[in-house]
Image (spheres, rainbow, N blue to C red):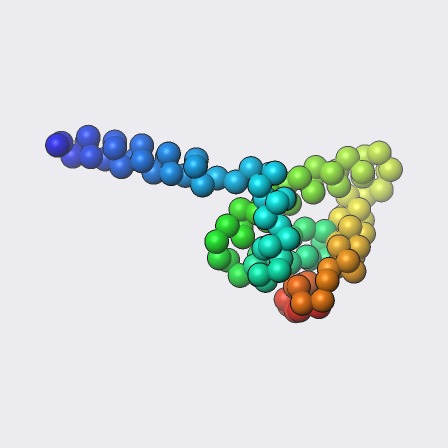
Length: 114
C-alpha cells in the first residue's frame, strides 16, 4: 500500500471517528447534570460554564452550552436594553445561587465546592 493511500485512509478514519464522537447541543444539555455532579464543569460568575477538570467531553459540553447561553443573553440584552455584560452577570449570579452543595462554582478566580 502506498504512503499516500495510508495517509488518506488514516485521515478518513480520523474524520469519521471525530464526527461520531461530536456532541450535539441536546446531548450536551443531557450530559450537563452528570458533568456537574462529577466535578468536571461548574458555574462562573460571568454566566458561563467553566471547565473544572478537563476530562472526558467536559470542554465540549461547556463550549456548546456556552454558545447557546450567549445567544440567549444577547437576545435578552437586545429586548430589554440592558448591556450584555449585565445580563451575563445576573445570570451567573442566579446560576451560582442555584448550584447544589457539592458542585463547583468559580469565585474570585478560584474553583470551590459550594
